[in-house]
Length: 63
Image (cartoon, rainbow, N blue to C red; front, side, top):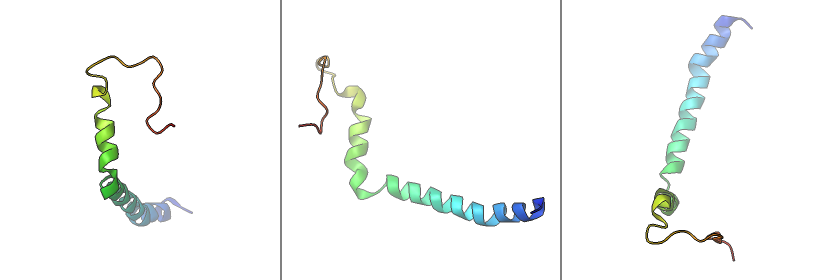
């Protein structure tokens, strides 16, 4: 393969694949079920605002 053929592929199909990947990431980030996850992640710095964290704190989903 020479440079010209690789350049043609990169200008068309790879650009299209990268665009589809980007749109997929945006759709995944703004999906309806992710709102609570993003809210919890955004509030991590404020979790222990009232009192210090315990030495050993169980994970939120652990039993």
